[in-house]
Amino acid sequence: MRITARNISFSPWLNSSSLVWASGFALLLVCLQFLPVEVHRKLWYVRDAVAGGEYWRLLSGNLVHLGWRHLALNVGALLLGIWVFYPARSPVAWIFAQLVCSVSSSLGLFLFSPGVPWCVGMSGALHGLLIIGALDWIRQGDRAGWILLVVWSAKLGWEQFNGAMPLSTETIGAPVITDAHLWGAVGGLLFAGIEAAVRKLRG
Image: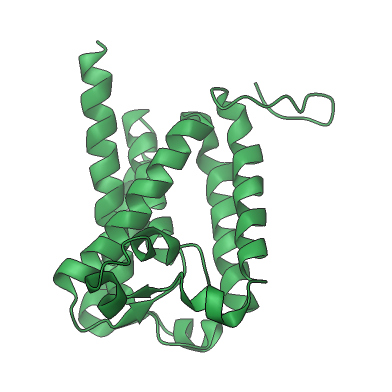
């Protein structure tokens, strides 16, 4: 079932409701951008703060952005990605995927990228969600999924060896934390593995 002007029913178990969830989540991100600076910064992923016990930053750092341009890029990518991939699962499953990819991105930075003192934005989680979408297409027998997976893997490889993609730093107005993309993609693989295991157990 698809959402149309005549049918805007919402249920967390309807796959078609994923677009409604994504729109609501995008609105949440916009609202967070209006927080006072001192409150906003309490949500950033900051390595020293996490080490000091402020573990919520492993998730909240994915929800706040440096500025409106940074936010617009990530929100646009989220809505486009969900529009393309939403038939695969319900909003509950997408929310779980978002949580796994977000925490994986920040936790990966904390455990394996000690040279990154701080990071904000959900681009890491978005890389994980795109990996999940590509694997969905592959599972459904769509060869485009393999193309997307190869292209995205090549992008991640480029970033690890050559740094951020051309013009990306200029676009957001700050350094791009490429390791966040890598660990977010690992989160996508982790989620896909968990989902496959659950699917197998259910027969």
